[in-house]
Image (tube, rainbow, N blue to C red):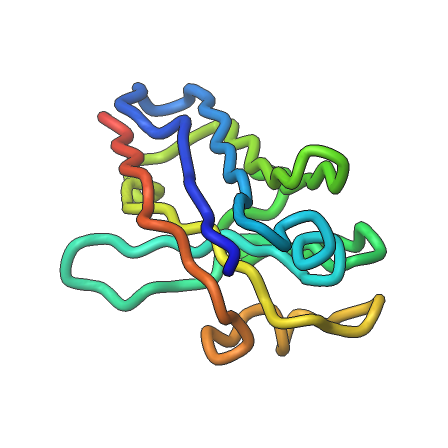
Length: 133
């Protein structure tokens, strides 16, 4: 079974940057990771978890409107990692950020699929991001 572990969260001032990383581990992690789409979600206190960014097997990327132009998702299949580079951070970006892995999927995905929590079979524990004003 594959496990996901996030890192890189912390406290940053508005306008600053952070880079989140997520590494997949487990006996079948290499193949499972490369055959899946990966995404980042976030959940702020009192709010529902929401889609932030996703990347499919082809390397195609998808973003929530609220982070377009500020966040960049990337993946390295050789290292079983997915990263989220966050720039121009705002206090509204404060949340717990979760990494998630889909089941084995087609080479190309779409945002409707990636933005649905039901598409994911594995979730990390989350990493806290706090942006001060």
